[in-house]
Length: 155
Image 1 (tube, one colour):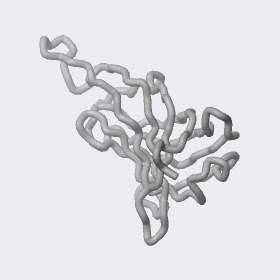
Image 2: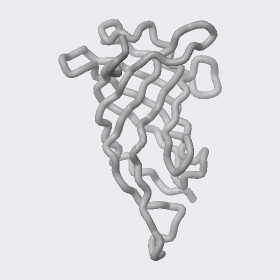
Image 3: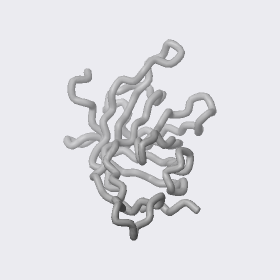
């Protein structure tokens, strides 16, 4: 049986918004959510073994093909967007690189707060499909609160 992922250890640092790939002739947005790195037990390994090493969680959550009206944070402020799950048309192509594979993440709701001098508060709601690539962890739903910034070097 797959282990429970320690969701309480996910500590978002910030998110970056930038131009994404084109989809059917339309521009889309991409986003990376960065987390503080941490170690966690490896459910696929024997913790009593001399060779045992815990897993490192240090990759950003990558989201592509986000259908937003703009990349301008002023335009996004105060808005909420909902999205279907993969493979329904309009889904966000999300994944987290963990345990040597890109584990799918279905983001179904993005809520933008009020713009401040530090960035735009943003909330991502969705399901991390951790069992899809045999990571040893169960899928889980989570809500991530962080601050969104435009990626440096993007207009």
